[in-house]
Figure 1 (tube, helix red, strand yellow):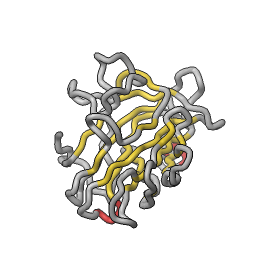
Figure 2 (cartoon, one colour):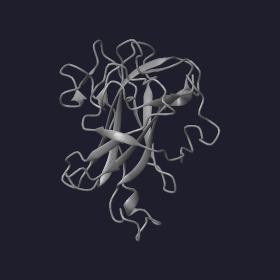
Figure 3 (cartoon, one colour):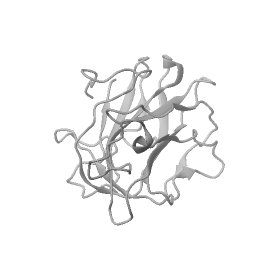
Length: 213
């Protein structure tokens, strides 16, 4: 794993550095499973950073980006995971947390909602940068949410207990339909989300995470 904190900030400031992009995706939800599960380690500042870009793939421009997390660790009650979306130059979204857990909690990857019998995910963190003061009004993507984003996942209360989690994230148009999402691969690194082919050919890199742990 690599450490990414040269220019990014910890959980409370979260106005993060924007990223490059490549390839296309359509379904964006994952569980903590497989040989490289989605896991925040025991260090209090451990975090996962998802980096993506929204664009018009023929389904219209993005109107918003949203992300939710689900705690998938059977450990201390009240400790969990949280998520926030940021775009350089804009105020980040509100932070949304999930601290509840029931045995078998998972995300239904067909519907990208909490699976039957599971506790709900967190509420969705939502970012609409085009509605903020200072939004671009001369750029090609003026008036919409197309562009680069960072989705940061860390632990609620910055506690010293490791946490597995699932995540849902989307670029959506004004009607609530998914628009194009480009993945980010960092310097040819192997993908963290092994076994997911939705983001492109096996030899391409998956959507990648930079993890401080």
